[in-house]
Structure formats: C-alpha cells, structure tokens
Image 1: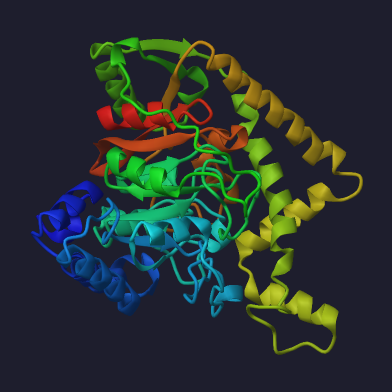
Image 2: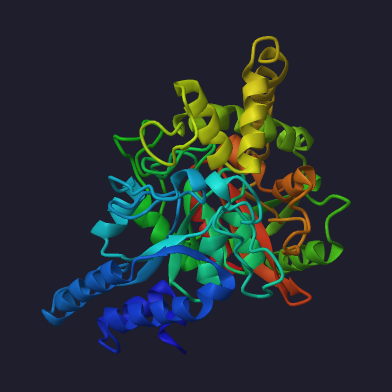
Length: 468
C-alpha cells in the first residue's frame, strides 16, 4: 500500500512505529497531487513549502522521543471557503481570486494545535452554491471514479482529493448536503455535525443558520477522529455549545433504526435504493430493530431550503462590493457603479441567481408570503424529527437519489440540479447530525447511505457508520 492511501489511524501507527516519516507521508500526497490534479482539478492552491515545514517539525518531535497526537504529521486539505492565515482563500469565485486570509478559522486553529499538515485548498462550487462543483470560477472538479462525471458539491474538491488519495482526509462545509452528497458520489465518508457542534468562525458565510464544517475521510473511524478534534464551544461563534457527545460503543441488538418512507420515492434510481435496502437488511440480520416511520412535512423541505438559503445569501454576500477587499472593476465613475459592475463582473450565474431570489423574498410585500412561511414550516419539519426520535435512535436513507451524473448534464437546469439535495437538506433545516458512508456500487459508481441522528448524538451515527 502506498503511503498516500493510508487512513488517519494507519498513518498515525506508522509514524509512531517509525516505519516512515511525516515528510515521507507528505511527499507521497504531494506527488499524487502533482500527478492527478491536472486531470481532476481538486486543488485550487497547493501549499507545498508550508506543508513540508509542518511535517519536518513533527518528525523532529518524533526523533526526540516525544509522544504525538493522532492527527500530528498527517497531511490534509481544506475546502477553499475555510480561512487559513496568509494563504489565498477564493471560495471558488473571481471576486476573491487574489484574497489572502488574515486569520485562521477556529477549526484550522484546532487542527494546527493537533499538529495537522496542511497541503492546500480544494475546489468548490462558487461560494459553496451548487451540487456538482461545476460553478467554480477555477473550472469543474472531476470524479476520480469516472472523469466524465461530477464529484458532487459543493465540497467536490475535498471529496475528490480524499477519494484520489491526494490527502489522508479533508474538511468541507455542509449547508444542504455539501459534505455528504460529494462523499456519496466519490465513495468516501462525510460527516455533517449537529449545528453548533463545530465553530463556523473563519468559514465564509453562505447561509449562517445552516452552514456547518465537517470532515471528509476514508473511513467512519477517521471521521470520528477529526470531529473530536474540531468540535466544541468557541467564543467567536455564539451558536456553538460545549462538547455534549457521549462516549462508548452501541449495542446493535438494542438499536432502533427508522426508515422514513418519504425518502424512498419514485424518481430515484432503483439500483441506488436496492444498495441502501440491502445494507438495512444486513443490519436487521445483525439484530437491529428496523421501524418504518413517517416525516409528514418532508415534501416541503426542499422548498423551505431554497427560500431560506437565498435570503441569507443575499445578506451575507452584500460584503463583496469591491471596496474593502477582493476584485474591483476598472470601469466605474461613481461609487454605485463600482458596486454594480464589480458584482456583475466578479460573481457567477448561480451566485447572482440566489442573491436575486433572496433579495426578492425578503422585499416588502413578499417577506410574509415567502420567508416567514418558510421559517414556520422549518419549525414543523424540526417537530417531525422530534416526534420520530421518540420512537427510534437514528434514521437511515439514501444520501442522493442517483450516483454521480455527467459533467454538463444538469448545469443548465437549476431545478433539476437542486433536486440532487432532496435527501440531505432536512438535516440542515433541523440542525441534525448526519453522515454518508459508502454502501455499494451501481455500474462502478459509488452509492452512499445516509444516517441521521438525534441532536448532538454523533456517537450513535458514527458507531453505526463504522459497522457499515
């Protein structure tokens, strides 16, 4: 096995046993990036010099006989909307093409303390808006299993980088499935923690009430390791809470797994459904109790999501005006013209679409009809989950209705593209933890199974994901 193909746990054990050095590990990943990035376009920025310096520091520590943490010296990548001090942070947009971050995100700070080696920043849909990583100003990322297909989005670069062994693990952000859906399409594991479990400080805001940073890894065990490192209360993010996670194993024979009927609908690929149902049957044979459940308001989730997100986007993206940082037009005579032309030239179609939709839904006369109704429905969707979780410990469903689709297949039809998120958005609307794990293949393309858990009960979904 090549060094860049190791999991976090294997890499850590090898470093401790002195079978190889952190520099060896880092060089193996950098070599893979050099070999495959032209083809896959997973990385926007590679920080080779900084990565090797970080690796050398860890090797020095090992040589001195000091103990190292589980993530120490292990090379990783970050989605390019998560800030790393003194490194370019583009969010996949022309408007931030040359922006260099002035501070570390809290999650990055925690990884630095843990001794992580940062290889660079990965590609994404512009400002994390998309389900295919095709809206990036830096060009689309390709799926390592089939380069004619998308890797999913918006964290497609992170998922492709992990699947192609360019890094040992990566961080992404998940607003409506942006960690889980690309994990499903690329055949890796992606965890969206409970809203408030991981700090959003230093993550470029898209929809602040839904955004969450999460790990993309090769195994569920690795996802747990990264999650335990980046989680916890942060004074820079008032929505974060103290570490509430319980430790310990779960007894599969005492586990009640809910299968929501609304997530097995006509229109989804029957072979994808079969992969998920076959896995559920195996869990049943292992002793888990399988319960059919219903989430009555599930059909409204996507509509609610696509009213709340654009509204929050229109407010959050007002800061990109060409005045304080980022791209500025050369063709303006007045301040208003500077604003209008900078945004017209610097932002892509999908971003403009969402800003316009959001501005419309928040405008006088429409706020009550759209945004307010969506927030009321959001409460009902959350109540559905509260009721279901009185009966079961977690829910199992497909991550996406299909396997990875072809590049260009849906990009001109926003509504069809939005349907890619149909099974993932509810976790964000309700603030629940959810994980996608590989559960099979259809025509050599990976299929993801999604597990949703109770608020702050990452333990149950991670333990079940490990079993799968």
